[in-house]
Amino acid sequence: MIFKKTKSLESKMDAFLDKISEAGIVYRRGIKNYMKNATEDFDRHLEQVTVLEHEADELRKNIETRLYTQTLVPESRGDILALMETSDDVIGRAKDTLVELSIEKPEVPDEFKSGFIELARSTSRALEEMVLAMRAFMRDPINVRNYLHKVYHWEKESDRLAEALKRSIFASEDLLLSHKIHLRYFTLHVDTLADLAEDVADRLAIYTIKRSI
Figure: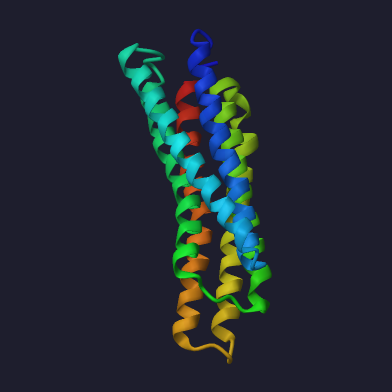
């Protein structure tokens, strides 16, 4: 265990990962609410993910300060800081996607709504497995691979769903090109969450090898 001698820091790291995990759930529900025209629920989830992103950012800064000022876990400090920075981008993307939806309010035809909901479910699964992989890295690195391959699975599944959704959108004869491009933009926005989770997984794969040497 990386933090076996610093239980308070371990607790803060757990809290940080809890925020990311919860943000993934809220993000998925927010996308679903938007597609179902549940405006009040969508606004509530947007507010929740904004708070979670802020709280995660504060925890990250606190952990970074302690790692530097108290010279804790020097052999793994750089890896932990890099992981936190990259995973912070994931929760930031979740918030930004809901913010952009609230600003631009894209009109999503009924035949594409289930595609967006399914894509959001897949990308949030990638995020969930990323968090589990990070927890394993902190406590039980030998099991990190058990979660990394799931991150990669859901990232590939998200790419597949995004491509299928974009093909359906551009095959439509009822939409203007500008409308199609607008929907493609949000398809990419939702899909990028899984790409960022994969970035964290790639780092975890490298750092796990380093710890085993």
